[in-house]
Image (cartoon, rainbow, N blue to C red; front, side, top):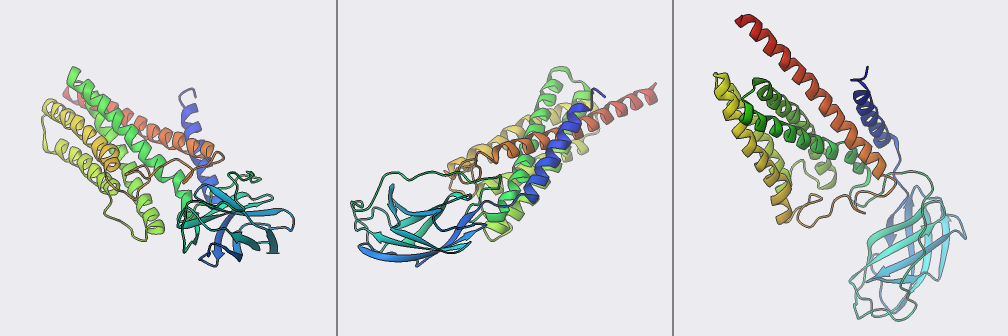
Length: 341
């Protein structure tokens, strides 16, 4: 039983994180505001709509944010639980072309609609009716962050990202086995390297599938010409070629050495195509080309523990599958030795 505790823990973490990912609702958010344009130097009535909000009279505030300056609403009238009307004077001299809307509501916390309004005029900063900070409020209860563009697809964070992390972990294990092959020539280490690559390709396939689904939901296509996506596909093909190489050499010792050398280069190319090159080019993918990942765009403090549990859970499942294949390889070697005797 002592060998099972970490496997049970991994399965529990992955299952628990998956249930949370599928069943937890999105956080309240502001999803629309109008009119789309605000003329500086005039008073405006802005109607905004919330998602999963419970607006109540006397428990809601609203602000415009432009270039780091916050313009409070003169009055906010609640229409119903998800609609409200703010009366605001927009001063002249707004710094930026686009203005955000910030709504603070009881229970929902602070909600921001980025680039909610366009400003026909731009100046050097609002001097009237502006302040440098606004009150911050936390929402009550756990919920997934509600991000524009991502929306419900943010749930995929608990599947797609941990699967790629698991793939990279397994390929690292395979590299260690291959280095040990070059030092000792042991066939068991060669079989271990092959087992790690095979399991990593399973997670690579799941990562590509979940990533493609995510791309369809957020970018409008199953695949885009993106450095990160293309690098992931090329990396998968490189490791598939590793298996082809192994199948083309019959001599055990020669196959082990050639495969180990190839695996070292494959790992370097994996780091190049997935970690290095995407950071040097423009990319839609978070974590690449200046597009931040694991930040306010995809995570918040309440979601991080669930995400880290998912990462540990999927990595544990990957290690469990590798353990099974490695044990199978040992049995196969013993059977082959028995037949030779």
